[in-house]
Length: 320
Ligand code: FSX
Ligand code: SF4
Ligand code: SF4
Image 1 (spheres, rainbow, N blue to C red):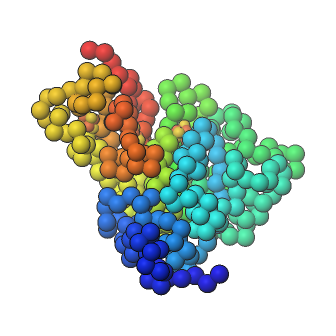
Image 2 (image 1 turned 90 degrees about the vertical axis):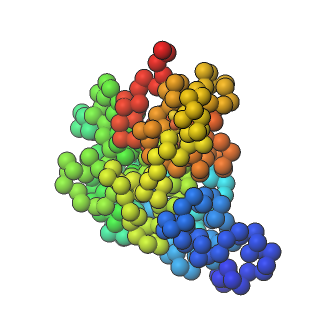
Image 3 (image 1 turned 90 degrees about the horizontal axis):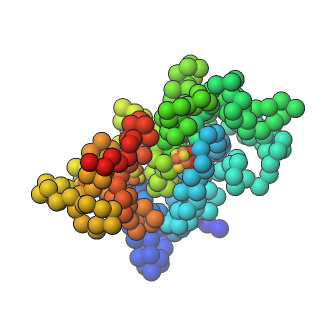
């Protein structure tokens, strides 16, 4: 089917699209802050962009995590996640949603990495357990040999053009690396340092990551290359602003009007353990669940995108 430029779409479809291709590109490149990626990517635009966005091989591997980041991404309804996976990128391996399994899946994983050496993106979800020679996490088997998360991140990480560490476990170790970390769990950047692997890494933390952060970073990577990163490797496009400084409840904080309980719909949540002042992310304006709500509406920010999470945020709440 020929790909139409958005300008050529009938007026009704353009209206449905909501924004022009130019604005979309501006958004993903960070010049229009505050517009949700979900609001600007839609099937019509994705079709229009197909011409420019060459399908990009992505290999997605999972270590120590809860698969919450995959679930978060798969819950993306706008854009429909199928369009992202089938039209924007070429997802060649994913342990949870892949159609094949066992040795066949492992062979495919290695074959794609070999064919697209230096050009594919490796997505890492979950931490890497380095203790006990990596035996805490065996991701597959080939020729009767176990392949650990350590093996695969080492091999494919060195072959990839770029690595996206998705979720706080993959970026900074997260929950598996919390106090009592017997498995030697670590994030991708720290692991690469120990192995001397120089492949560029983009950190997209969050427990889980927001689907817009993942999709937006992938599109930026394809259109413009690696986005601008902060000092802990996160795209400033999504992690450049302090939650507390931008929170809609900041005026209440300044007036000293504090929530006494989580069910209190008004008031600042600081006395309930809110970590907004130490946290950098755009949740306050992007929100979650397709823009329905965000943590501070119903609870507190627990700083899930920060390198020290969860130990650095703990205890989440201490009664006075
Ligand atoms: Fe960690 Fe992500 Fe938290 Fe879970 O993949 S970032 S535990 S939401 O799923 O790994
Ligand atoms: Fe800051 Fe949290 Fe209070 Fe918002 S609710 S003003 S982020 S302390
Ligand atoms: Fe994580 Fe805080 Fe954003 Fe909630 S508001 S997703 S805890 S950074």
